[in-house]
Image (tube, rainbow, N blue to C red; front, side, top):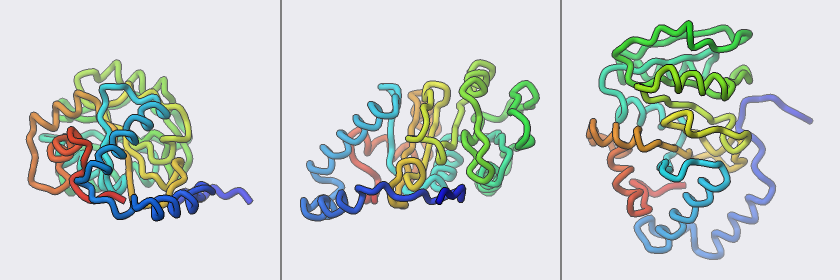
Length: 237
């Protein structure tokens, strides 16, 4: 049977064996400040960049969920306002969540039967980051790479963030077309829920460091500092 339910996806068949191996080798009990964890994190970042064609100068962080990424972006990358483009429930949820943290978040909707047209967007000057949903989980529509390329060209002075929860690890993504990409692993990665991959360009890292927001355990500045040592701010899944 084929189901188009938005997720989670079916876990990859070898995961139970991998978990058993991890248990047998003691990996599940490894301290996240240990040399063993450092080696594992460095290797994982290398493999993700290799398999997903992530630019070498981009940074990868491990967090709990795509929902947490909404919070990290609003906390650590936005000073004035964000601009959200969406045509479905998940993109709208991101926008609504951002409004709770940044009241000046702006939204633009477009019909799910129509292609996204950046020429119609009225992006406020105050918006420092443009937030897009690559593959809208609620209705299975997707932004083309050509659309992302146009956005990159037209708004080269803004950061661009992309929710790729329903596409990362499933289709080719030109990561250079945006500054922030994120995805929970229970979709195309085929893994158990409880972790998300957050990918940031050098521009996004510089922006976070310039804002210097450090009031939360998941502040991007703190995550950057820890991953320079191949460590996480908290014990990951």
